[in-house]
Each structure stands twice: as structure tokens, then as C-alpha cells.
Length: 275
Length: 267
Image 1 (tube, each protein chain N blue to C red):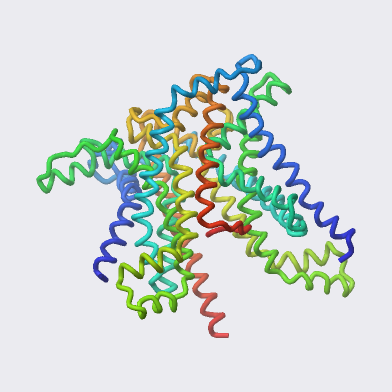
Image 2 (tube, rainbow over the protein chains, first blue to last red):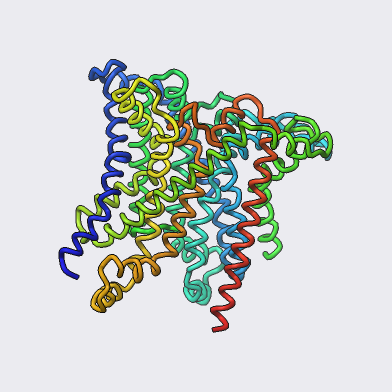
């Protein structure tokens, strides 16, 4: 192909490049700009120093995010393995069933957990019928984490499953032939081989869990403010864009750091989708 | 072991579907409670048909999803074709790094960053509020684009480059060669990207929440303002209808896929 037509075909990417500068890069510059200015536009560090007040909120968000991610991993890993063992037709149906809830509004699904978890809710009235005293579940830390696990579990199952479905079975058999018991096979063979799926599952659950803002308001009853809730309030209630921007900037940096740490485990930069 | 894995699978799926079952059950409730079932009725489905605000927001959601997925598919496919021609190096990795930003950044950060841009530019150009259909469309196209690009790029890499050159040697103009040879071979990637863009756009709440104005409400935003007070079961009825239609579409898609697989096996 002549260099001229190759230049021309490179040019078809230019509308996208203009778009991404305008609507991906420029907005991030505005986040930085608002973080370091006050309402009148003058340079200030006040928004950054005000952040120390929110340190407990940041810590709680990270803690909840880590717990939810670990629980998702523990639930998803065996399920992904079970699915990958089925015939192709059953696999496809089960994958469809895992993805299906994600197409429903997460707001409605979270709201409907409220009906399940309330003191006089569905779970407690079922428990009452078999003679168990009602358990207080709504507005607890556990309920918030349950909401996160519920909403983001498919993001953990899918990448782990898609790696497991392509595993080389002769490797697992070799491991068994070499005398590995069931636990050794899982620990030394299946887990290492599904690592790329596990890593992308962890990031896909951790990032939305840390930054969520709706789940804790509904299932935590407002007593477990997460960083997303604080940011949302700055933009939709108190209209302090500058403080909101600096909170978001810190959140973004936190997530970039944790992603960089996670990426050291895989170290590949394939340009393509995991799923 | 077999029984254990069956029980385990059942429990995980029960967990995933419990709130959806609750939602479907209470859409048939005869009272307006969402926690006490007092009897079967279709009242909420009737109420839904008369709820103009909800139907309006459903219509808005679909319009926005169609527009944003079409625009992002065209823009994203062109981008992928161009990026595919870039040599490996700082320019290409720079473009790919920027492309990944909307996927890796928390949605709330993407939402507020665009809101800041729109509000800032809006103040410069006019006194009226700028947030509305236009800003939401820009936001949706922006978060859809990476999904289109990352679905099309691998297909382009799989395409034999000699084919397009052969077509040109046989007298095709480069543009004709692209539409007749390259485009058909990357079509599956384009369609997957477009479907992903469409569903992401239908479902998006967080980014829409920060970039929308009072004049243009989508369904997720209408649901959000309702859950601040109390959700009426007609919203459950609508969700149940959406659930059933997605289920039917997926089953049909599955049947079509296994049929086409059987065909290729027979050949």
C-alpha cells in the first residue's frame, strides 16, 4: 500500500482523537482545575487540606471495597469452575443466567433488597414461620457489603469463567498424575492458570465498590457514608464543586495506584476485551 | 461432590435472582406495599399504561441508547481502522491509554468530570442551563466508544491485510476495497460493540445522573428520584416487563446460535 493511502487511513481516526481530547482529557483537566481553585476561580489549597476531614470515609470505602471483593472472589471462583465443567450448551445458558440480572436497573434491584432485608421484611417473615426470631439486617455494615457483592458478583464470575473455559485440561490431568490431591491441584494448578481472570475480576469489582454511592444510602440507612456519597452530595446538594472535584481527584489517584499494583500480577497489555 | 456443586450453584443463582423474584411477585400485589403481599392483581400494569411520566422516560431512554450507540459505532469503527494502521510506539500507546480511561476510571469520576466541563463551558456560552439531551448524548457516546474500539481492533488484527491489497490490485479503489473486503470481515466485532454500547447506554445511571438536566429524564433517573421517597409497584411492573423481554430475546439468540453451530458441524 502506498504511504499516501496509509496516511489517509490513519486520518479516519482523527474525529475520534478530537472527541477523546475534548470529552475524556479536557474533563479530567477540569477536575484538577476545580480541585485547586475556590468558587471565584482563585488558586487555593483549601480543598486539598479540607480532605483530612474525610480520611475516615476514604478508609471505610476502601475497607468495604476490599471485603466485598474478597467475598465476590470466594463465591465466584467455585461457580466459575463448576460452569466451565459443563457441556458447551449448558455453559452458554448458565453464562446467560449470570449476565441477565445486570440488564435490570441496579437501582430497582437494590431497592428490592430493602424489601427482603427489613425488620418486618420477607426474609424475617420467612424465618418467623420456622420459629426463628427476626434478625436485624437492614442499615448495617453487612447489608451495605451484601449490596456491593450482589451488584458486582457477575463482574467477578465472568472473567474467571472465560479464562477457565479455555484451560488446558492435559495440564490438570498431569498435575493429578503427578500425585497431587484435590487441594493441591486447585492451589498449584487451577489458581495460577486462572490468574489473569482473577486479576481482572478483582479490578472490575473493587473499582465500582469503592466508588459506589447509591447502595450505602439505601441499605446502610445513611449511617455508613462512603466516598461516593460524599462526592455526590457536593455536586447535587451542597453545590461545592471545588471540594467535590478534589475528593474525586484523590479517589482517582487511589484507584490508579491500586490498578498499577494489580497490573504487576499480570504484566500484559493486550488491546482487547477480557470477556 | 456432584450434589454439593448442584446445591452451591442453586444457592448462588438464588442470591442473584432473589430481588428480581421479589420485584416480579410484588408487581402483582393488590396493595401498594413492596413488602407485604396481600393478593394477586394486575392493577399496577394498568397503572403503568396510564403513567405518562414513566412511559415518557422509557421512550427517552430508548432514543438516547439508539442515538449514542449508532454514533459511537461509526466513530469507534473509524477510530479502530485508523489506530490499526498506527505503528507500535508512543502515539499508539498514548491513544490506547486515553481510550482505556472511561473504562478504568470510576463512573462517578467520569460523570462529575464531564459535568464540570459542561457547566464551565455552559457558563461561557449562555445563561440557560446546558445540561440536557445534548450533554447526555455526548456523555453516552464517550463511555460507549472504548467498547466499540476494543471489540473492532482484535477483528482487524485477525483480518488478512493482503486481501485488501489484492482487491486494490484487481482495480478496486481503497474505499471500495474497505467496504467490500475489510468491513464484512470485521462485522461481528462491530455488531458486538454496538450491542454492548446499546445495553450500557440503556442501563447507565451514574454518568447520566451527573450530565442530565430536568428537561430530559431517562428511566434510571426517574427510578432514582422515585426511590428517594417510595417506589410504586408500577415501576416493578415495568421492570418485570423489561426482564421478561430481555429473557425472551436472550433465549431466541441462544437458539439461533446453537442452530447455526449445528449447521457448521454438519458441513
